[in-house]
Image 1: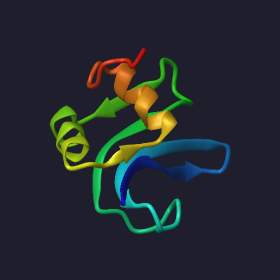
Image 2 (image 1 turned 180 degrees about the vertical axis):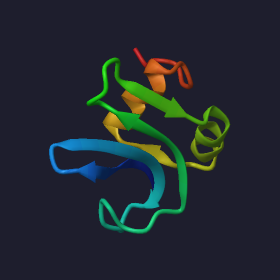
Image 3 (image 1 turned 120 degrees about the vertical axis):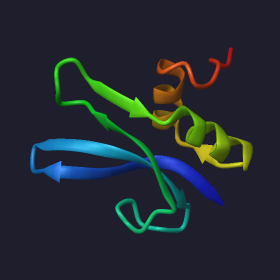
Length: 83
C-alpha cells in the first residue's frame, strides 16, 4: 500500500520534512516513489509547500495519508476537512 507521509531531512535540531509517496513497508527515511512537497516547522512562519495536482493524483490512486500529512493537506485546502 502507498502512503503519503513525512520523511525527515535537515540538521540536528533543525529538521524539515519532505512530503512523499512511499510504500508503507519502507523505512521512514528510506527510498520513496515521489516527492509532492515539503514542510518546515522551524521557520517563522512555518513553510508548507505542496504540489496540489500530485497530491490529488496520489489520493485518487488510493494512497493513504498519515494523520500529520492529512492535517497539512487540509491546511492548504487540497482536501476537505472530514466532520
